[in-house]
Length: 79
Image 1 (spheres, rainbow, N blue to C red):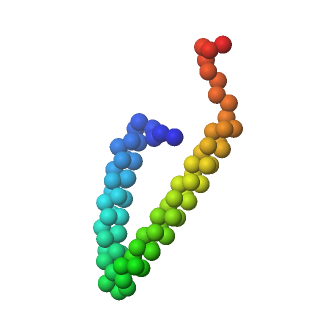
Image 2: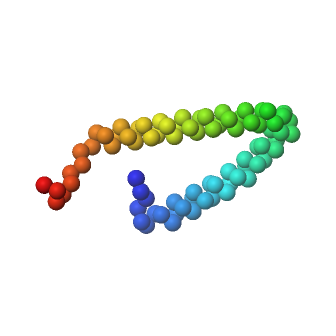
Image 3: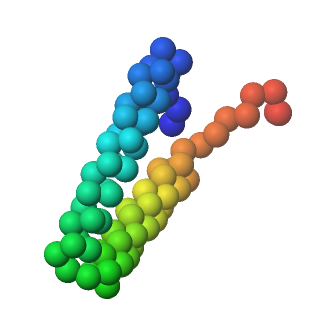
């Protein structure tokens, strides 16, 4: 669903803060992986994270479609 109007600014600020924080931490982790291992380990790690993210997204989409398919929509003014 959508965020309530009075919470949108706070939610957007939280989203941007987390996004900025993960860019800094991600660069640090990538540098450490390359420094102590090799590029192959880094790409493998990123591939595994990508697959996990894809599966989580797929599960969320399927869950959302299933929950919406159980609801009945009443269209006012069409009868």
